[in-house]
Length: 393
Image (cartoon, rainbow, N blue to C red; front, side):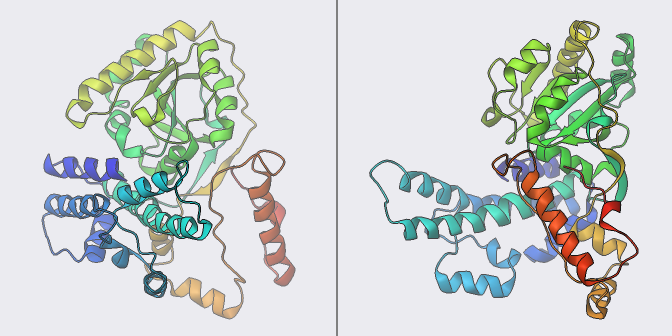
């Protein structure tokens, strides 16, 4: 959240391109900012977010009330769990769980609830909205997912993390004529980003805007090893969480270049290249040249194990609150009417990270979704059978 807000501020201050006009307008309404200049508006939004993040734990974050569902906010206030500054709350949580300190489970649980509010509203909701401003809003479309998206004719960069905006400049740079010419000079058609972990899904949401450089989301964090094992990945670009610990020996064995843009994602044997906004042009050039060198070193010397049958070509992607509302004609009435008439029996959001504790990769998530679909079809008649649904994992 902090990195995203800081990047938005610098982008606004330098007159950078803000692709998500609707998201910017939405945030202006939520934050009650009256400003016609979009760059000044974006800077004010970033400043409000950063000011809240940096508050001490005894000062309540002001944007919680603006972002939260009012009945829920009132309940949080009644329970006394409105959070102070998010960074201070995290610090307090670390201190409380240190040796010989807090041993009251109820108090620690309440602290977890405060952390959940601050990290949920800021780390998830606001981060996505700020990314929408800089990168463009999601759009609903049918698109490929799975290992089939990997094309060995290109120089492939697997991206991991959850800070899409940190490599936005590089992403645009990869499709410019001089960079494509560099790729062709070493025998490739160009560059491709291969989606992996959370940031791959971020790109998948906005994939309509980046079809030239982004082929699709290959898989989540637990498929990282399988993606690397295809032999067609030439570099791993890590910028935050979900970079699977233990991929280093695989990268070393397959001569895959590892580059980390943030030290929180630093991997052994990986080059640390902290993202600096003012140096993004030079950094992007360095990254591109390093990945080309890796491509030249490894291609032809590392066997390819592509799985073109994995995944599918027509997964429904790009669904967000904004894109769904737009799809419905700009209001929720069509959806509400279907619920009222009984044609839609229920709506569920299945959200969370993957886990191997339930018997295998995504067994819990897929099992839950199948059960929800089965219960829906047991109480209503629709034209589509559960077997016709395609899910990406």
